[in-house]
Each structure stands twice: as C-alpha cells, then as structure tokens.
Image (tube, rainbow, N blue to C red; front, side):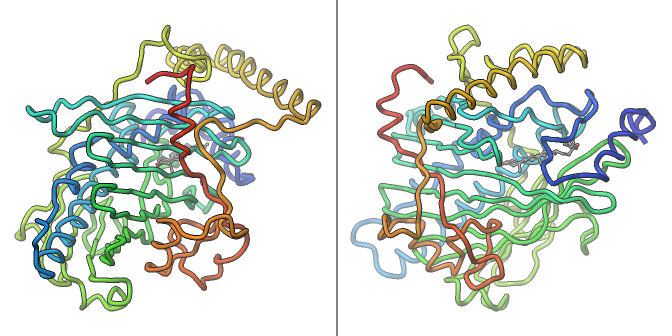
Length: 425
Ligand SMILES: CCC(=O)OC[C@H](C)CC[C@H]1O[C@H]2C[C@H]3[C@@H]4CC=C5C[C@@H](O)CC[C@]5(C)[C@H]4CC[C@]3(C)[C@H]2[C@@H]1C
C-alpha cells in the first residue's frame, strides 16, 4: 500500500467514486492524482514510433508482381500495421505510470483546445521517413471528444481518428468504454485500415496506484481484406501477466470466425515482449520475437516554446494550472482552473445569445445516415469487417445490441488546416 492509500483525501475520494455519475471529469480527485497534462495531448501516443507508422508504405510489390506476390506483400503490410498498433499501447496506457508513478487524471480539455507538434526524421540517413505532424483538437466538451490527425506528407500517410469515453464503476475499478476509431490511409498504395479501440478498466484504485488494463477485443481491418483480431486480458488470464494480448491475422473477416483459420498468431504483453508463430497456436517465448515494447523508446514530438504558442494551444492555456499541480497547491489549482472554466462559460453564454454556435477548427462532423456520404474508406472498411457505422462502443459489430442510433463521426478537413493562418506547428 502506498502512503497515498492511507491518506484521508484518497479514502474520501474513493467514497466519492461510489456515488459516481458517469462523468469522470466531474470527480474531484486529490491533487496527487492530478496530471498537469491535458487529454488533448494524448493523441500524440498514436505516433511515438513514426518509423513503424510509415513502414507499410515501403512494403510495395513490384508492378509486374504475380497475384501470390501481391498477396504476400499485403500480408506483410498488415503485420507491419499490427506491429505499429501494438507499439502504440505502451505510450497510450503506461506513459503516466512510467513518468509519474501511477495513472493520473488528465486535465479536461476546453472546447476548441488544440495541441500540435511534429516528429522530425531523426531515424534515416536519406530522409526517407520525412516529417510527421500532429493536429489534435477538442471538438466537443460535453461529452469530451478529442479528434486528431497525424500526417506524413513524404510518404502520403494519414492517420485520423477521434476518442470519447463512457465510464462506469464496479466494486473496485473504473470501467471505460471507448467510442470512436482510427482510420489509417496509405495514399500511395490506395490502401486503408480501420482500427477500433478496446475497452479498459482502471485497477489499483484501493492501493492508490491506479493503472490501465485493457480488455475485450479490438480490430484492424484492411481494405485488402486481411484483418487482425486482438484479444486483451490482465493478470487473471492463463499467462498471469498484466497487459496480455493475443492477436491473430486472418485472410478476411469471414475466416476470422474460426481461430483455426489464423495465418499468424502473436501473443505476449503489449507493454513488454510479444512473440509470433504461423497458424493459430499461441506462441510463447521460444518462438520468434515479434516486438519488445521496452526495447524501443518512444519518440516524443517537438512542441513550440510556450511563448510562441496561440492561446488555444493546450500547454499555453493550461500553463498556470499545470504549475499549480506540480506544486500540489490545491487552492491555486482551483483558482486557476476556475478562471479557465469561467471564461469558457462566458463564451458559451455569448454564443447562446448571438446564436453563433462554436465552429470546430480543422475537423468536420460527418453524418453517415443522411446520404451525404455515398462511399468512403470508413463505409468500405465497416462493410468488409461487419463493424457498426453507428456511434456505438468502438468495435461493436453490425447487428449487435449497440448497432443503432446516430452515425456521426469526426473527420479531418485537410483544407481547413491548409487555410490555417494563426496556429503553426
Ligand atoms: C477521475 C477519477 C480519478 O481521478 O481516478 C483516478 C484514476 C487516475 C482513474 C481515472 C482516470 O484514468 C485516466 C486514464 C485515461 C485514459 C488513458 C488512455 C487513453 C487512450 C487515448 O488514446 C484516449 C484517452 C484514454 C482512453 C484516456 C481517457 C481518460 C482516462 C480513462 C483517465 C481517467 C479520468
């Protein structure tokens, strides 16, 4: 038990969780659990291995390739995309534990908050990787939704997506369903991938050292038919290790209905070592190493100095709150947060009076049910993967109990970024 666990603020916090209303940002957490980082910054975790993100673009068959060679290259590419995806998980779900000792409560982004940065090509000697940029924007405040786009122009790679969560409480953990998805497009290959987001829960609350554990299933569906099905579990599973996963790659969604059809199986820890073997058997450490998450340090993106940032940029906007959190000065945290919250309330009031709703900056809210979109990567990929197009928990299948209601999703409007005058990377 950490010393925090006995502190009165943590026990009263745990009691407050008991009367939880579903909106995590409404819980007043004790200062030591607060992160000085805004949730709008979490979009960067999709691209802390830019080399892995771009790698599939270098796996192209020759123009005169036979059907078998074309197929073999397509399989190589989904294996590379799976490796990139697995490599994102340590940053996504362990980076706070590694840098601050436990999972923390991120700052709740205000509507219109943006976070931008870039990864320069420090990997290659011939510059073949090129620069990768991140655009992240809080496109909704109630409920909180962060949209993002990662763009590597040199290799025509665009990753775009958005994330919102719904939380509930069980006896000892916070259960989180993720909403949204990521779309990964390799324009040179005319190939795209739909990536869904796994449910998670927060363990370690009683011992005041919370950490994320992934659960359930997520999918990576390629426009060339191949699909990766990833199953997550924690300590409880056979391996007894935390952050355990099994990924199986199939020729197409139909064959994914039977594990025996798996072409390749990968298993291990997404925050540690994982191994692969042909077919559907579960590989172990005697098989070939697939990826070692601890062996390759994440590349942190470059962010302009605060004094060069626009007032809507996250680190500038939250600077005083972040400093107060680092000093654990609870009164100052509340004082500075209240200033930001009041400014936001005034903006909403003015918009209500003038009738000018807040306009999102770089992302459009696309309705997939009113006929405005006849065909795009998302419709194609949800068709071949049998995944719902609705605003359902990420990875919900067509025909499942969640496959109902609206189908509106956030998409990057690259023209709006190209027309951007005020905010620079
Ligand atoms: C608010 C209650 C509280 O402070 O509880 C203490 C604990 C820190 C648990 C609650 C917070 O835990 C944080 C973990 C956050 C997720 C971490 C990673 C991701 C992946 C990223 O791609 C999208 C966002 C997401 C899902 C984060 C969402 C917000 C989470 C659950 C924070 C909880 C408030």
